Picture 1: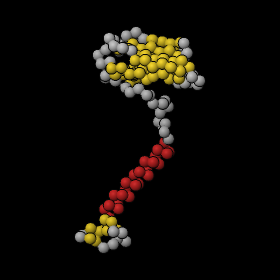
Picture 2: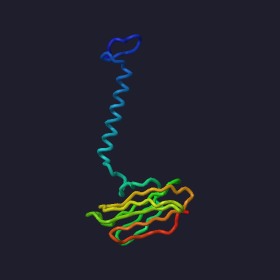
Picture 3: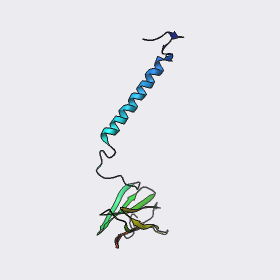
Picture 4: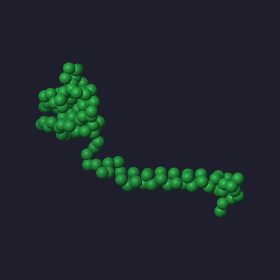
Amino acid sequence: MYGRSRGGVRVFGGVPVRAVRRLSAYVLALALAAGVLVLAGPGAGSADAASVCNGRPTRTVGFATGELRLYRTRHYVCALAVTKRPGPRQAMSVSLQPRGGRAAVNSGRFTRQAGPVTVHALNRCVRASASIAGRGASTGWLLC
C-alpha cells in the first residue's frame, strides 16, 4: 500500500503519509460540521430571532401597537421599536438620548422594526421613546 520511503519518511503516491492523514482528518471535520449545520438548521435551539442590538436586554416597554426594547453593554445603550403585527409599511420611529447629549433617531416607514439606534452612555442616564402607527411610549431617565 505504501510506496518507498524517502529519507526515512513513508510516502503514498509521492506525498508523505503524515500529510495525507492530516488532510483526510481536516476533510472529515469539515464534512461533520456541514452535516451538523444541515441537520440543526439555522434557527436550532432558539425560539426567538437574534437581536440586532448588542448587549443584554435591559427593559421592554409595551404599548398598543408594539414595544420599545432597550439593550445595554458597559459603554453603550441600544434601542429598537418592534411592531406587534409586521406587514405593510407603517410610520415608525425610535429615539434614544443620553443625558447631556443629542438624541439618536431612526424614523420612517418600516414593515417590522425601527432602529437600532445606539448611544454612548457610560455613567449617563438615558431616555428612550418609540412610536408605531401614531401610538407610542417613552421612558423617563433610566439606567442611571
